[in-house]
Length: 117
Image 1: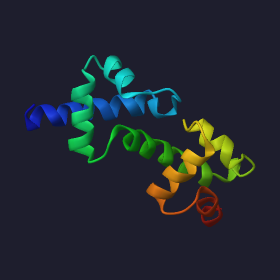
Image 2: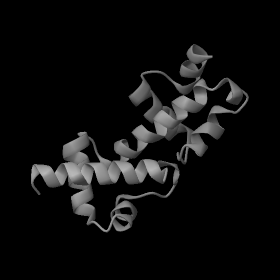
Image 3: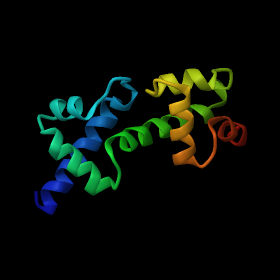
Image 4: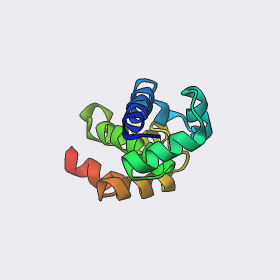
């Protein structure tokens, strides 16, 4: 794959994930994403690794954490539990959410919420 193809695929993957909020799918996998895009898992994985400098799980979790940050910052959602927000953003467990959130945001979800509100 040349650089032009890689950038086209990068854009295609990003647009598809954002438009369809695929990161909220608790069962999303590299294979499912590739199938949805009519691409091979190998190509999707290669594009994510090379263009985003991360693996598939971190790639999806970065979108989930960004969504969680929006929700945790929203005063209208202050009575929604962190666990509910984690589930709404596509995480299957609170511990996976806490680990990913701290990795990408540098704070726990509760610390983040307290600073925002």
